[in-house]
Image (cartoon, rainbow, N blue to C red; front, side):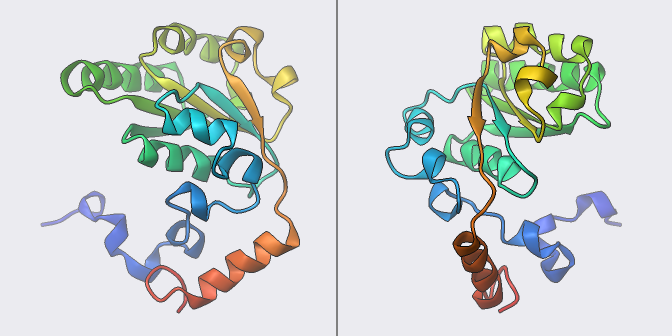
Length: 189
């Protein structure tokens, strides 16, 4: 008997929220963040050259912070692990780091640890990331709507590059809506 956890989300069709189904898969599909994603942009160039930095994406809700981290993971064939600082703790970080060490040692694959709402981690939780970021065991990516200069401790901030994402303009939103209406596979068709 198959459990709920055995179901591949890609086979759920319309049961997966539209925003998740339409999530960009490559840099060219990410709209409104050209300073990071257009061909030749410094961030994109670093990723394409295999030098993905630990980083913090700072911007308003709905600007593509999570999407950008997922695109980077896909582009670099990295393992993608996602935590929410609202519900995760140091034990979760330790488990992911252990798996990341094994993946790197046995398969040569990097792990991107994406932490949503990184500003909600306390100092101790943020400090737990430091040795693993320094050693390169994980590539840390955090997302925040709050100014990281005030909400992320200085030790972690000094080991990550901060990239600012801007609110989507009207043109980008229009393109996204039209794509969702037109796409027969992932959208409303």
